[in-house]
Image 1: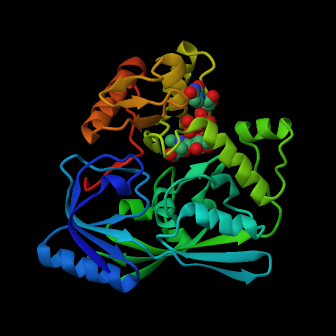
Image 2 (image 1 turned 90 degrees about the vertical axis):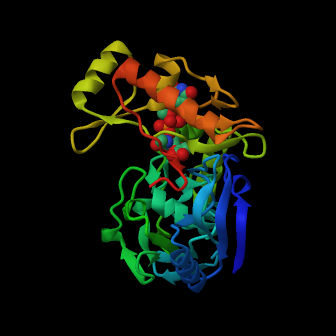
Length: 339
Ligand code: EPU
């Protein structure tokens, strides 16, 4: 277990901004996580779990807590007929998990290829892309409750998954240490998302899980900034879910606005489309932060950017959207330490 004080967090996040952790612990086992919890309790500070840092905004002032970087990275596959249970330490890189599954011909997470972060973060966030969500394959997660120090297995029916949310997101004292996914050898390609249909029309083979994962990575590479060049955290905002009445009124004002009716009668609308077509905000900037030209739901942080630049930009974008559409948008990216 590695321990440090005043450890810079920016290099541990994909946005690459923000200050230091008061205390920092690398946990290589569930026992390490428990030891970190005990330490935090002694100092009267919160425990802040960190995965791949791909959905986090670290404040410039840093965080006054015990940051626990989850380092358990083992991946095992338990085969059982048509189904395979993939069990991974929460710190395993999501891309490694996708590679492990697709190279064995397992279906279930190929549409989620190319997403940065860890499998633990993937469960907290219920990552989703190209018509699939983690919730679709989730079997269980093991957690340690920082409030009590005890271990608990959260099964699928307790995981309360929703759009970019879960039991783990809403119960932050539960630190995810292990995640199990139920994958299948049965061919079940899910290629109904427009970008994938387009790839298929262009002659890209979308039969095996590896092919689909490859196609998804190619699509993402065209839309998202390259991590080596500029920092980002994927979609910075969630797509808004609004009333049917507001959606109809907006569709009249903004012809062609994509709408996705939800089972409960609400409508999910595309914020990228609104930022681009209704508000012309591609490239809109504040300090060293801007809305990415190829996908305005993404905030990119140029070298030298501060968390304050990103925060100011996000606030201004939210205000512009509110005054133009009446929609109160929500962030997908979380501010570290803000509860
Ligand atoms: N669009 C524009 N202009 C643009 C970009 C997109 O008009 O510059 C339009 C597209 O034509 C499309 C719509 O906006 O009609 C939606 O775009 P896209 O298909 O790229 O999906 P998204 O809703 O913007 C969501 C997820 C992404 C995920 C993609 C693909 C959220 C917040 N974002 O983006 O997830 O990769 O779908 O499934 O739900 C993430 O959560 O970090 C993330 C990257």
